[in-house]
Length: 138
Image (cartoon, helix red, strand yellow):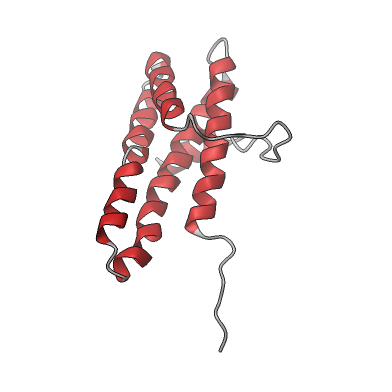
């Protein structure tokens, strides 16, 4: 039997989501007043960071299986911010605290400052409808 290769690994999903989150943070920074698109952007950042936080353990499972404990712990520490910032954004959004949303978005931008998004990206607008999705999950 041959090896099964998964083209949609947790690492590739994390890279795709971090690029989309970086794009959403940039778009959120351009918003002048909170509206429907601002809610979608903040909700998308919340949902995407939650998914990123879930992919961390999946990624380090193979390293731990081989005994690379230090590498696994270092990777966990590098991404430990994703879950708490997702929760912080969710709470600020639920309370309609746009100052808190802006502050959290700034923290996310600081973490993703090395993420590059090419001018001709094909990410589209993945945040459309994210507010409704977030309300469903709560």
